[in-house]
Image (cartoon, rainbow, N blue to C red; front, side, top):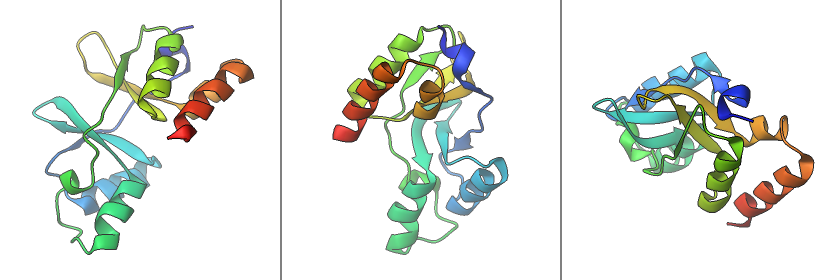
Length: 136
């Protein structure tokens, strides 16, 4: 099975200098909890709503501060035509629950999450991935 068959199509991205407020508003509007962060048309990180709250709001940062304060520099990608076994392997090895999906030109086309996998792979395979991701 290919990543493109089970991924969420479409993805909103933010720029590294976008404000915390702008990114939080985008997440609310799009009803998403995570977005990739770009700089000069290249992915440089990933930020979740939790990252914004824990890394910035709880430490007193201003809503106008840049999202770079909250983002994690770890952003892992898969290609839309990759087999989902590769995505499972990356999630397991890197201890992550979401992957950015890109096309041949490295443009973002979607996201793949553990939830997407849970709805489309055998429960035994999912349990293995989940146990590895939760272990760390």
